[in-house]
Amino acid sequence: MEQETTGSPAPAPGEMHTGEVRTDPHLVHRLLAAQFPHWAHLPVTPVASAGTDNAIYRLGEDLAVRLPRIHWASGQAEKEARWLPRLAPLLPVEVPTPLALGEPAGGYPWRWSVVPWLPGAPATLAQLADPVEAARDMADFLLALQQIDPAGGPAAAEHNVRGLPLAARDRDTRRAIAELDGMYDPAKLTAAWEAALSAPDWDRAPVWIHGDVLPGNLLFHEGRLTGVIDFGGLAVGDPACDLMIAWGLFSGESRAAFREALEVDAATWRRGRGHALSQAAIFIPYYLNTNPVGVGYARRAIEEILAEVEKTE
Image (cartoon, rainbow, N blue to C red; front, side, top):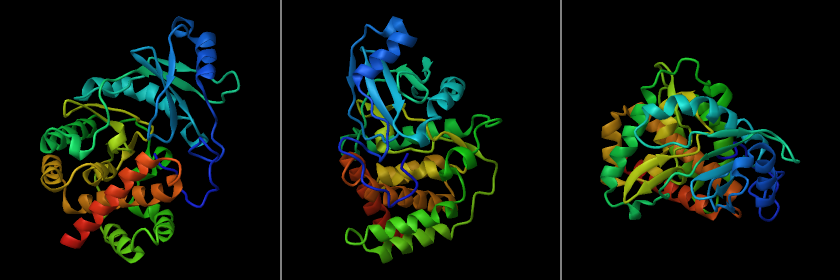
């Protein structure tokens, strides 16, 4: 997930966030040796990723270690360990259900996890063998997630502001739009944002949301969706935020197929577009010099949103 505020000092070289906890393979080896010695002999390899909350290390061939980088991600490992075992059997693609939950130690301050290494790789629209089929696969995943009983699930108010009414993001989004002056026309972005804000709020029972459905969190193999990762934003709330992928990955016929498969009403679609705009607008200035892949995804989303708004509003 993106940092929800803007205007922070620049991170140090090699970091995504100011004040993040630095990790390396030596730390991972020490943590494993002390807590999970049966895995300590396996090679540890850093994984380049556009993900912003966790440092990821491949452990041997079949495992990965995820360590939160920054304080706001510090509860994610425990949440995933609690809920993914319940959700995974009911979902149509693989998810990284934690195999072990590590404790703070050796100078590392938070809980961390060992998860399966899932096959596949993030994809762009151009790499998909059949974008329409991929869009329907994505919709099938979201429908399955939303149909799981949300009783007792983590409330969006405490775990993911994206599951709340869109107005909760208004201040940060407007600030980010101002920071994008020179890259995009702030008046056009503001008009698109205000159109989204004008949509009625979700008035039905809250449902499970992934909360961070972006291209980098989707795994494809031979053009098909095979896995969804990074459930740090998992919560129960308004499902509109999970529509962000409509502008982050799909377009034209594939976006239409995605919307049709989900049977999304006009208000939810507009809120979803607002979430996509907000995420991208906040992401770009914060990660402009530290996460080029993620910034590329965000730029693509903004361009698709502006094109759609110009055509339909």
